[in-house]
Length: 114
Length: 110
Figure (cartoon, rainbow over the protein chains, first blue to last red):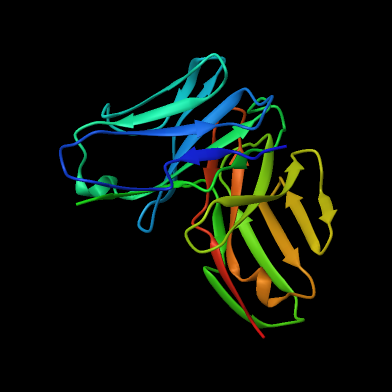
C-alpha cells in the first residue's frame, strides 16, 4: 500500500507570492492533517479535514487555508508569503483521527521563502 | 502550544546501549504516539499507546504510559547507529489533532 505522498518536495518562493501544497493520503484514509515544522516552534498543527470538512484549525493567520477533495486528497494554500513561512510542511493521514488510530506522515514539502 | 515535552532534549550513547526518552503532557488524552524523524525528513510512526494501556512493546521498543503522572517513556534497547534521529511524542486528545513535544535528539555512536 502506498504511503502518504506530498508534492512538491521542495519549493522556493518570493515574499508576497502564494503557494499550494498537495497531499495524497493512504488509500482508504479519510482524515488528513497538516503541520508546520520550524526549528523555533517545532511541530505546529495547521488544520484537519475529514470528508471534505475542516474539523479543527490551529492558531495560524487566515493566509493559511486548506481544503479536501472527495477522493480525500488535500491541498493547503499560503497566500502573501512571509519569510517566517519558511518551514517543512507535513501532511498526515489516518483512518479516522481521534479514534485511536495511527497517523502516518508524508516526507513533507520544504518551503523556502526568499 | 506544546502539550508534550520530551526529556532529555539530546542524548548521546554508544551502540548496544539502551536509550530512554521521557515525555510529559498537560491534559487528558485519548492516546499517545511516538514518532521518529531522520534529519529534515518525514515522521515515521513508531508506536501508539491508548490511555487505558500501561505498557506496549514493538520489537526493540518499549513504551510506558502513566496517566496519573501524565507522562510516558520510550525505551530503545540494544541501540544501533541507524537509530540516530529525533524522537517525538504526540498526544491525541480526541480533538482531531496531534500535539507534539519539541523532541529528543538521539545520537548513537558506533
